[in-house]
Image (cartoon, helix red, strand yellow):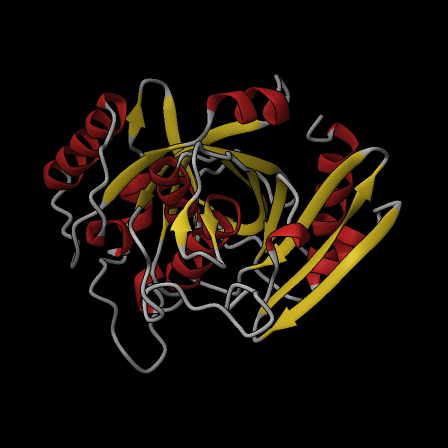
Length: 294
């Protein structure tokens, strides 16, 4: 079997994967990811028991149980570059023998649910609403470093999006990519009452999201209004944030099931921003745990 070099797979002297500082036994099959390390405790306070806590850099993990279901909640920090670390190390924990540095026989699949915050690109989606990402379009370049076997629907979405931009006279400083959420998780969590759509994942908060403080963004002033008009098989681009496309893409590539749920904090088109973001995040966490992974 192929032996992974020390520089390819970094394992601590304690036998933990490096960045997450986790041993394989400390990870559950059901994983909730949050961006903010402080939000891990917001989730785990609803656990009936916490069996393990870990913290290394921005990566905080609590693993515990809700009823009989074992769950891990992990903070990723902000941006697709952090997602590259988190998804690969989650996969290594379950599919690589860290001691032997070899792939395990068979494959273990995780269920991964991102709970995040987001800005909105549709006027009828009000701050405080939940949006589930049926697809995501990455404006970052992460997945271009991988040999990603895009599905037919992902290719069709990307082609339609690029055609829409060209027709509307818009250009991007990078080549986008498109990824789909896991349909089983989408059906389980979104149900008939939540908004589903397409999420734009940006590689930064300021210029990549069209903000100009002391520098000028290459995105046009009407970029988000233009992409908000896009429609793919009845789906609109509902929101934008900084992690979803990377999570969906790497999960698909590595054989895991992933879904992203975002609570809308602000509407970019009409300038509305939620007065109490913390309350909305709390409601999202409570609602998802009430549905449960089981």
